[in-house]
Image 1 (tube, helix red, strand yellow):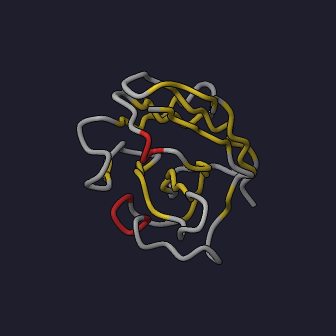
Image 2 (image 1 turned 90 degrees about the horizontal axis):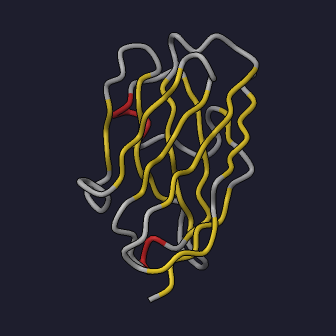
Length: 126
């Protein structure tokens, strides 16, 4: 079982940047992909970005391409999401996830698969 703990959320203005972190523990991640999802009030959870822990291949939702960057740091067993040029529509609870899959396949991962963190709130004011 993989344990995930997100941090770094907050209240920012449109155009600002924010970096989310996800501390990972519990298992060796060599066969895992790690990803970020988000859920706004009244909406379904949606895929944001994913990265293969070994190899580093990435996959992004079209809505965040060019603005968000996913990365991981082996030494700290930490996943990151650098968010630039934030928009009010980026407001959501952001969740970290892990599963034995590819980065691209993580984009269609159902919520009853893999491991999930508790979420961190990002609010972007206009």
